[in-house]
Image (cartoon, rainbow, N blue to C red; front, side):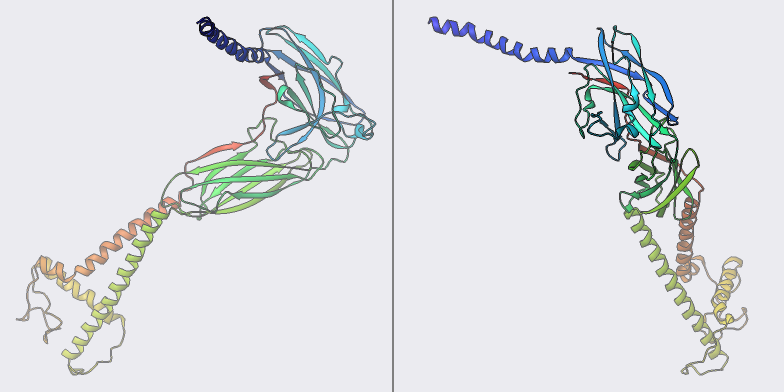
Length: 453
């Protein structure tokens, strides 16, 4: 009984101790979550060999407690085609004696590598860039990393884990034999056929020079009639970002959504034109093609078109047979051929105009109440309208006699309407469109709100 009572009181106590043990690491972890920002996020400058340049970065402590921040310089290079950077720490000069000619981080001096900043305040960290006289011409790239812990010593070839740092990037062009060159190595759509006016584009630009360039331009989309259906600016609103580092490839993605009209279909083209370079502007361009074919509307349209062609050809053949029949009756009535004899009919314009002439006579009879021409089957065909065998047409008999002509005229009017609608839509100079998911894929490295453990 005593053991049961102890177990009864011990179970809640054990549970509380377990909950406290779980919460303790979370509280400690929360205490190390600090926020910091740095300005400016990017420096772009041109320096000649042997020159010295001075500036500073401002660190803002956004926390409620004083924090000591540490700064150090590292080189960086492109890590992938999305514009992200990989940070390379400085190594011992003995392991790479030539690094002084190309390593921008080795040219940066931070006389105040750490600073304690009160809560809600800011402080400046000065630095100096001293370019050696034997520096390699072209682009050089470094970053000033700021964190809450001093930098760990780097090993050759290792990368810096920047999850606990903010950075200010330096893009420096050293004067000399600077080569600005690049090319478009891919401009394509995610698929060749779309069922609505839209497309996902991928543009890959390769920098083949020795300094960074910022390709700028636009992509214009045209329908199969050469009318513009969209335009997207490349790197126009990216600020200081959107650069392509030397010997690297940069990928830009965007989605285009055009005005959804079932008539505006066919083969589309997209033309990209980019310009780059500070010393001398250079241009490159590329074109890609894709189809916009909505399956169901096109199937319906082709069915209607096939039906219209069938009706038109059938009516034309029937009209020709009727014209030849009228000419045969005329020849038999004039005694030129015997009824059982196959006549040799000359295919002249007058022969093929005879059904129209017959229709005009019937229309006059219907409208004016005069005697209609006699039937072509009658031997009296071709005589005056005052013949005793003439008869009057009423509306019903006239409609029945020319029912096929009426059907053809209706189909012709409907077909003409759709053709006019199609042309009026596809020949509009410009339609509404939307550009979505324009991706510069370059994060602002000046903000940090993560665990700085």
